[in-house]
Length: 205
Image (tube, rainbow, N blue to C red; front, top):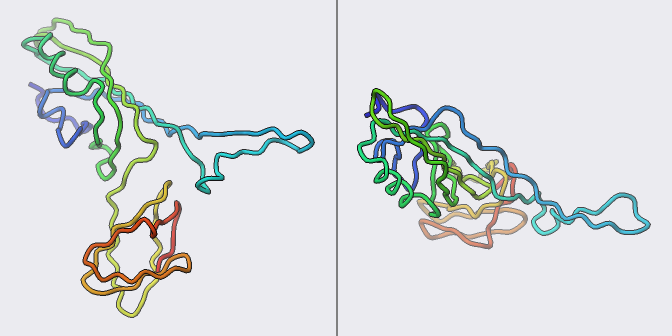
């Protein structure tokens, strides 16, 4: 058993992998920003090239991001059983997940397990392996805004890098104005594809 829970842990599908499976995340992991997708067109007689990548959404678009983790399991009673257990849980599966070092944000991606190896030490058999995740480029934030809207107020909302359709929860009838459009909201919880906030810091009335 690990003497105490390490600070950095992986929570997959609401399961703490350290608590449930004894998977200890080793220090250091890879989580580089996603690379930008680009689509250049070279037009004869024109300087440079035209980049079409931002025409559709009005912002840069990105490839999937890759996260790489290294794990160790200590004092494993049955190495092959543990390998099967971990592979059955993760390999090829797609889940929401988060890291305790970034607790307020959720990722989503497909997992791949590789490089199993085991060695016998004084503490018993030790199993090491890698877990790679091909994830969506953006991570989701659990940010909420509590807005006293009586009398009307403009709130600047930090949307992040991708557009979102906000969930608006209200205790009464309200009017929301954004981008010269008005939305009369009477239901306690409202979300519509017509009300989409673009990336960046967006003022909403």
